[in-house]
Image 1 (cartoon, rainbow, N blue to C red):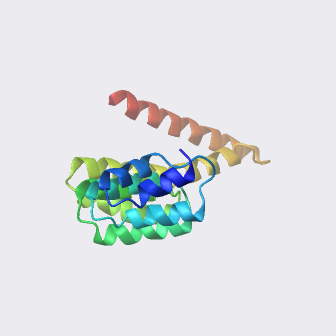
Image 2: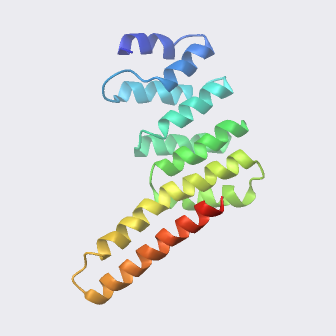
Length: 166
């Protein structure tokens, strides 16, 4: 869809239109105007519109989006929206958000919120940790390389073991 069509949907008084707009972004690059509109929907009166906005914003990593997701978490009262805020916050890839996500994982009894908080934890921490191990696999010190390859195998085995158990 082109930007003008999308703009009409995202600013519509009909929540269904705003929901559709959050799920189908306009063709082309994500502009600040698009982010602005999605952030407005993050505070929408419709919980489903907020949920869809939170989900979509998770694919737009920036400090501005990250701050908005954290701010919304502080006031959100809809469990499904909260769940998507957790996973989208994790998708920002900032390990500093791990305490927020870990606290949610430990204190939230809602299954959907717990799984999104867990995913958020994986998304915010795992890539950086794995990159550090993989980078060390190329280190000039053979002892460091050997340790890193062992750690890489441990991480791989852990993920295989846990996913096979599911």
